[in-house]
Length: 340
Image 1 (tube, rainbow, N blue to C red):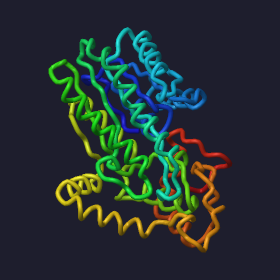
Image 2: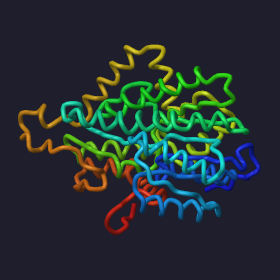
Image 3: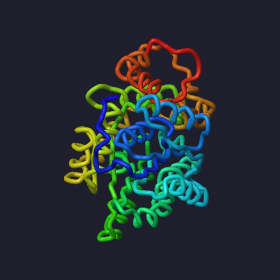
């Protein structure tokens, strides 16, 4: 991680990061700590939080506080925010980053997938924002709220429909809060990252032909040029917080896709339809495959990866870089290390 001087306009501020135990949230916590922020990281898993806090201290030389919290629970979020404020005497920065990723054709999804995505991604962002805003308004430094959306919320991505729906709601929340809090001495920044190498493919849930879904997702999300180094993304996000920017779209591919969708939405939707035809079909849509092949959602770290020529090519394209990112950023990888 590149060293950043702590003498910035974030120096000495109190910051809260949800989903901060691994991946992008962990890197955001580290970048804020480097700038001299007093950071509280929140997540559901106590052991992950402990490892994440140790990681930040090792990388930055600064300690962070932790808070176990399920962002889907409004009462728990309000308690977390009060806890973070009590530890530091105030709250100046809040970053709503917690989320889930489900990868599957829509024919392999049920209502629970949409409900979980909305509750965790949108509900978590809304709960965090609503609990934090009264405290951010009182910040003498001028409060900063950051909501982590996605390019998937700016245009629907095939086989990521629950995720796209929830991230679209986060985008609307950010725009609405920015408008309604104007003139109140605080800023709202909504960030829409494109593909990033965070190692999240191991925590994502895959349905339908889960091995094939895992292969294409992990390959693309880790592919050079198409995807972005997660540490660089975290730095860009913290810079946006410093400058109080309203909206940030990360990666050139994401910016092109966002602009194209705004200018020619019908054309982009047709191209998405063509892309969807190249992705694995749901077993339930193929009469040659038994229904038992469609066996619910499985997390990436639990999926067998047969060494077929197709999956091996996918691994070489991007999974190797993503696996390295997972090891760096506290993502869970059961079993012994691999050469990736």
